[in-house]
Structures are given as structure tokens and as C-alpha cells.
Image 1 (cartoon, rainbow, N blue to C red):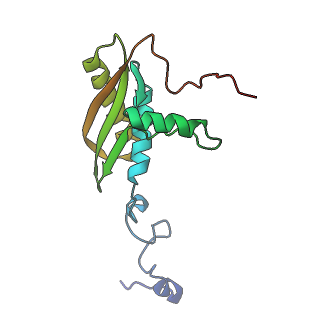
Image 2: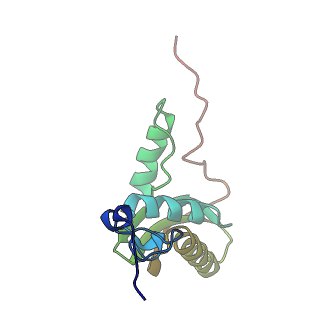
Length: 158
């Protein structure tokens, strides 16, 4: 038995293939490479951390102070990545978080909840394996302390 193919099929590389087959061969999802920036992973981790009960703020004293000033500047916006450092490889990510916890909560429970939340969010959204989430608790927010992020009303001089 002889196989006959049209000249057009030979020219386009379609000789011997059914019309429904993929041209490049294999799964389309495997064609090309996807890279994820450190900042993307940091944003995901920052959002996941802020959603955990007991986390008051993120970042150390100076980062929070500068962030509070930047938040008050029109167009400055709130930084989701404050207190987050991400290192992203081709298939793995490692995160360092600096948080402030509410007074009265169990720090070890909050840290465990943060790790769980961050690992689930980053792995679900990026497909990267999170190999470590290091958490530094830099402060405790006492009930009677003013919140650095709240804008205080001060009388203006005229």
C-alpha cells in the first residue's frame, strides 16, 4: 500500500498527520517558558499574610514609618510588599516576612497560620514550591498604642 500526500501537506509539514493534530507536537501548555518575578511572589505573600488574624502590620519600625508617610502622599498607595522579601528560582521560592502581631495572640499560632496561608497562596497561584517561609516578629501592637498607619487629625496653623 502506498501513501499519497498532497504537495501542500508536504510543504506545511502536515504529511501523514490527521487534521486535528497540533502543529508543534505535544501539549500546547509545554511550549515556551514562564518566569515569575520576585515582586509577584512578594505581593501574593503580602496579601496572604495580611489576611491572617493576629497580624497587625508588616515591616519593621523604619519600613512602617516610611510606608506610613508614603501612604499619605497622593498617588503613593499602600505597599503590599512592605515586610516581604522573596527569592524566586525556576521551580522554588523562599520568603522572609517581618510582621507586627496584635497583643494577646499566640505568636507561634499566628506564625503557623501565616506560613500555611502564604504557602497555599503562592503555590496555588504560581505553581512554585515554597521551600521556606521565615518569619520575624518585630513588634507587638498594644491596645493603647496609636496606630502608625492611621492618619492623625492635627489642627492646621493659619
